[in-house]
Image (cartoon, rainbow, N blue to C red; front, side, top):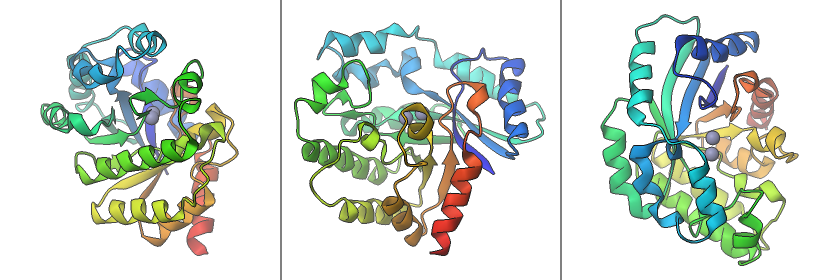
Length: 265
Ligand SMILES: [Zn+2]
Ligand SMILES: [Zn+2]
């Protein structure tokens, strides 16, 4: 039982802070957790976000509202925690916002420290965040057709996989979160993504974040996408996308059962 996507951000970099995640994980029956941080928290990762700034003040404010910290603090914390013994397996990594034009920068940044993993995410379409309740509708969904948005989202996802920069691909269908669907059939796209993931030996997530954070009815991936990923034998990791310790392992049991059920079919 694993929770592959847990945001550390709410806690200080101390063992006591980390133990809050471990305690919930144990209560939920997990034996492995993957702790990560968003790259947008860190001063050193600022160059990754250059192209999303200056488009609209609402998006600028979103990026700037959080106090930026040095990635050295996170790296020191990881190094220290690796010397401790915990009752469950803990891996430490990063959730990186992928932009095709920033591949070399991402490569350099990932090589400067031995993280246990890096997971790549598509969080922006045409440099606009697609999931922000405050401005995404005005800046993206009202400006482009759903077909254009989905095509661009999955085009970037293919580039992300082909970059070979990451061990995993985060939440590969969160673009559905507002219940806006394209007119075209997504199945060929799902086949392409699944095939690429298996060729590039990458895992992806059955991430239930959309289910409890955005009230989407799918417990993670859509049935269609889940079935196709399993058919290509893509490694699927269950993930809560917890942003606080209390959500570690949230719905993971149900997500595991759902994968098993679909795998039998
Ligand atoms: Zn994400
Ligand atoms: Zn996340």
